[in-house]
Amino acid sequence: MKDNKVLFVHDGPMFTYNGRCYHNQVNNKLIERYTHLGENVCFLMRSKSIKYQETHNYKEITHPSFSFMSIPNSRSISTIYKKGEVSRIIHNKVDESAIVIARLPSSAGVAAVRYALKIKKPVLVEFVACVYDALWNYDWRGKLLAHLKMWQYQRLMERIPYSIYVTQEFLQNRYPNKNGVSLGCSDVEIGSLNEDDLIRRLNRIHNSGKQIVLGTVAAIDVPYKGQADVINCIKRLKNRGVEIQYKVVGQGNPEKLYNLIEEFSLQNEVEIIGSLSHDKVFEFLDNIDIYIQPSRQEGLPRSVIEAMSRALPSIGTNIAGIPELIEEEYMYDKNDPSKMDDIIMKLFNKENMLEQAARNFKWVERYESKKLNEIRTDFYDMFLKKNDLLE
Figure 1: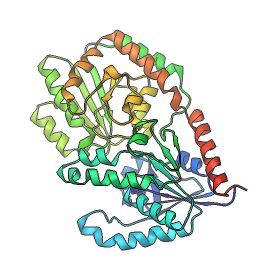
Figure 2 (figure 1 turned 90 degrees about the horizontal axis):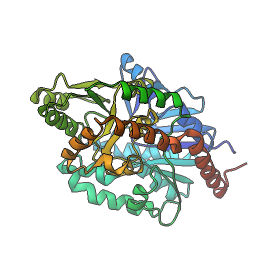
Figure 3 (figure 1 turned 135 degrees about the horizontal axis):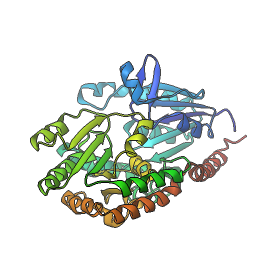
């Protein structure tokens, strides 16, 4: 390929310390993926400074093709005056790049797409979540904006020439790319599955006692992630005499969850672990019995796929891309979280747990890196050829 300059745009944030960049989802593996499109990959997003001790919760990005440029936060009332500066930065970076990759939904991504389309710059959209669900399940202010924002993104997607959705159906149906070329390909991928992980899981189930440990990996200060619903469930199950624990991993301020734990006197049943590095997340998953994704908004949840790769029986809401992963009988309506009680109790049956462990491990094979990379690379080659960017 030519020496293409690739610009990746998203709201972020990118975590920074002493001039170095840290993240978990944005990592060397992702940069390597984008080098198929060009030798230089610049990430443009907001940044957040972290302390040295916090760097251990993330992976440092060290890929030689990677560079980063920060844009100011202009999303709050107190910083809205910076919108002009943000626009100038985005326009300048789009001008000097050969290819624009915009991850949506994001305000910075939308600005980059609109300008790239205006100057006829090759643009590829990655659509990863539903803006309507995110706003509607946030607070009353979000509900006022949800329908408008969904309509705006739907209109924008009608103009997009190339797009990759992380789901196979949900996002495509809600934000259709009617006039362009699109691909359904998860941005979440796993390495080659190891049968030893399944064997260890089955042995754990066989040897398990009365107490079951549930776990969730998600931001802990975002209401629509739903951990509060699980804590309410733990209270109900405790009142029924069920021995159960719930462990929560994720970044963010845990104050609201701690208040709920104290209100229900669940200090012995619920543990807020906080942020973990990606490697430590797999260790966490190996030491719980059931994974639960109680979200009211999602795209295709990375944490569910990673839990299934560890042969974990999994429960979730029946929203977005979750039905593409979890069997119907182990999902519940996001508006009726009391249903999770019976689903959890169903998995107290070892036969059901063994069946789900084996089923999930087999199902997640379709998210192995090798398979997804082949699909995605073919799409990238088509994109490069159509835009005359191949050597």
